[in-house]
Image (cartoon, rainbow, N blue to C red; front, side, top):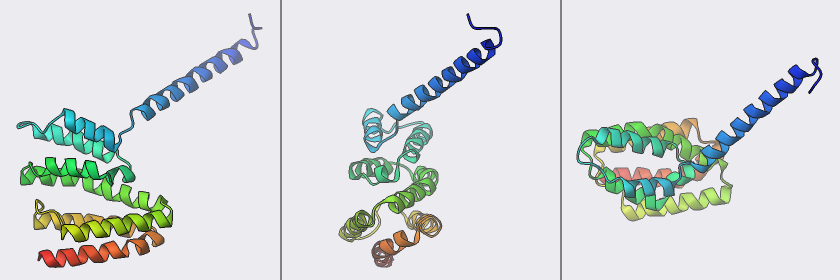
Length: 185
């Protein structure tokens, strides 16, 4: 049994150790449940778009999308799956989804591009530029107002979040987007 003087110190040390153990346990649990492109794709496969109560479905989907890293947002398989869902939404539902996901999405993308080594960033920009050229412009399921909203939010994030080198590396993609938008009009 500890001496009466050291007893409060022992109790404090045990409480502190217990708190740190709890924090580390929660951190470990959260890491195991991180949202990834693969986990969102699995969720989409398990939860097809319901005919009713799409608001709750879209809220849950947008929450998952907003937790993705910038790199996971670029996953082509996820993009394909999301386009399938997006194309089956009403115009108002599409708008609600864009409102919920665009700001965080573009900011996360710019932060991910900022963090990439310059060679990898330039390679990704070249791939995106080539894909945009192959597609001929924005997806046809987007109306002009939605395209404008995407462009506006993208430019806002580009100007406020991207660092100078990222802005320079993105120039070919920005030019390709401008050309695609001109062809659409």
